Amino acid sequence: MAEPVRTCLGCGKKFVKSKLLRFVLVVNKVVPDTGALVSGRGAYCCRDEKCIKLFVKNKKRVSRAFRRDISDIRIELALIFRSQE
Ligand SMILES: [Zn+2]
Image (spheres, rainbow, N blue to C red):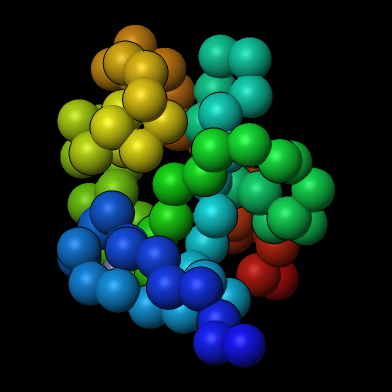
C-alpha cells in the first residue's frame, strides 16, 4: 500500500507523511506530535526551518487544517528542536 501523502503548510508541496512533522492541537497550544501519540486532526510541515517559519506565520492555513480558528493560539516549537538533539 502506498504511503499517505500530506501537504506541507509551509511550502504547500506534497510529501509522504513520514517525511513531515505532524502538529496537533492540544488544549490551547499547537504542538509537534513527535511521538505520533496524539490522534485526531493534524497539520503537517516539512522538517525544514524555512517551512516551519512559514507554517508558524501561516495561521490561516493551519486554522483550516484544524477546522478551527487558531489565530490566538500559540504554536509551540521548542519540542521540535529538543527532539532533534
Ligand atoms: Zn515544506
